[in-house]
Each structure stands twice: as structure tokens, then as C-alpha cells.
Image (cartoon, rainbow, N blue to C red; front, side):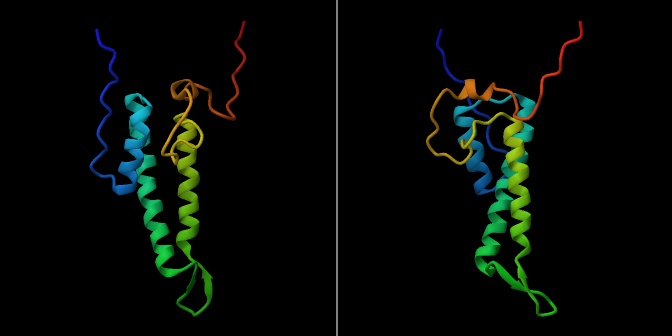
Length: 128
């Protein structure tokens, strides 16, 4: 009997470069249930959107001129920030070890870290 790890699920075809890279990085070392893969695909799609928004800011600059001539912060900055927060919440819900989604060289017992409870969720007392 050989002890081989299951083959990771391929990245969804709808993912772009950044999302597919994140998918591969996470599934190389972590295991997810089928229903978690659907949620993970959403987080990976968010990575593509964040990259596109960041590219728009890099091209246009942090400040843009409105139609009326007023200078203001690029609207993609706020949208990118909101997507990053939503993505972080997904990673917490999936119990991805902290910093793992951005690290190229994960370390430590990943599966054990993945089993910990979600931060901020209290266990309800059992009724007698």
C-alpha cells in the first residue's frame, strides 16, 4: 500500500494568471473539501480582480482627475481594498494558515493549523 497524496483539483478555467497561481499554491500543500473548493475559487477570482485593479492604479496613478476637473483618489484603490478584506475573510473561513496565501515557502504543520477554529467564533455552551 502506498501513501500518496491525492492529485489536487485543477484550477477552474475561469481563473486568470494570479487566481490560478493562488489556487495551485494553496492546493499543493493543503486539502479542501468539495464545498470549500467552490469558496476557494471565489477567493482566487478575487485575486485576479485585485491584480487588475492594482494594474489600473499603477497605470493611472493614485490620483485621478474627475469629469469636473477635481483631483481625487483613484476609485480602484477602495475597490481593491474591499476585495482584499473579503478575500481575507474567506481565507479565515477556510482556515488557511495566516500568511500562507502570500508565502512561496510555507512551513510548519499545515494540516494541524488548518484544523483550528475560526477566530472570533465562540463555542456555544451545551445544554444539559
